[in-house]
Length: 563
Image 1 (spheres, rainbow, N blue to C red):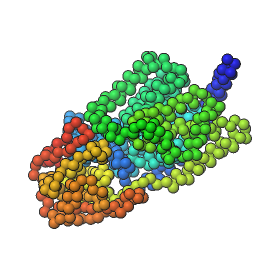
Image 2 (image 1 turned 90 degrees about the vertical axis):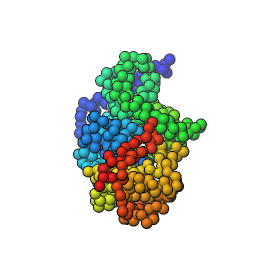
Image 3 (image 1 turned 120 degrees about the vertical axis):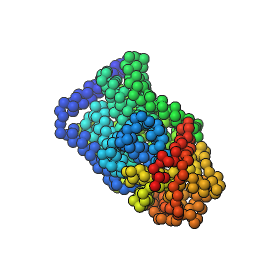
Image 4 (image 1 turned 180 degrees about the vertical axis):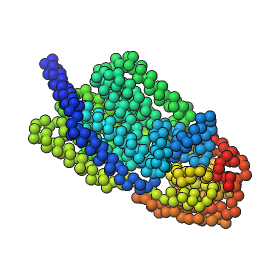
């Protein structure tokens, strides 16, 4: 009983010390606090923005689709298709077949579309949208750590998180990891405020941020498990069935529920097939992220994080250490349940690992000189992370824009057949360079993939005759194909034979510039149809393995075949 009492007194003293420290920092509003806040954000943003003009969209195929979907939203803002939004979307997809508005929620694309409207459609505009969310992430993370520990530790945590190699990769890529992580941290910050101070305002803000996170990326569902776990470990489990919980649930259901339900209705089968065909099983499913973490999170920092978590009761308030542990656990359990071999998903529990690592350095050693020395060591840690971060260059390719520019600037209109990797990258530049939307891109003529290439893919044409008939039927004027693409279907081989024949002429070869070994030696070949004849009516049927039905659009509604 005496030990328990002493532990309780120690915890109260820790909470009192931490509370007084945080209150002092908040009241003072000192220049030092603002220096750590603005300085840490500025350092990360300068590093993330370096080489922002280099390369195009190629990360995991998804990056190009995110860019094209942002273009779709920008065009929808211009056209305002209020009366027939579904028909507008189908027609747009028929012309630019890389839109993924129903596969991912729309929030990020709204901001990206606004960026395209304000700055013009470009790689830089898209990446600046991600940087905007990066600033939000760093600000919310600084505030969260500051409210739990102190401003100095918050500054170090902010810089350390933003300079991690995997985080830096996604700060430089047009992917949803940074936006969804930023919104998730904001939700967690206000949820912790609700747990500790019982403020309704914090509850409502947490619900709003959580809704925004779910409307950015479905993987934010881990936040729901985090909320439940933190109620349990803080001894507030009765709130699960309270009025506050009902209000919280209602806000999330009203704001995020409708779109998520629509998405599951239209793409639920495709998502289930994708998860089922690539899901890990057995022991691998449980241990995968633990084994992958040392390769995605700096090993030295990981050791410090594990040590900091083990000793957290000696330098942090136990309740807060438990909340951070719930953050790690909720992310690990959620993505292990999904069972996808995606090391990047570990990024969602990088913040608490940084919290434990940096907190150990800045808070464990309380003696005067030793404390100063360890805080200096924390600053050295940032320098160690900063040097390789400054020289880091994300994997990139370029060359697709040149091929698209050759067509758009030299011809009035036409239907372009594309067969190569990362089709969305080519689609983006054709649309970005063609404000009048005079060209149409055909992609799903010879084969169609599900969410990713694999057993669910379908070959749509068989034999040379069907390939030749498709080229004639759709009035293909241009064809852009990769030169060294690994052929997956006979129809692709037949297409290349047709293009090398007498009916087409080579307009150009566009080398792909890259720092990735798998892309070296790749070229895009541009062909033009001799004696081209526009399509004579008919219907373009697009095989959709991710929707309950295919898309059918009259060819005469597509501008590319009219001139």
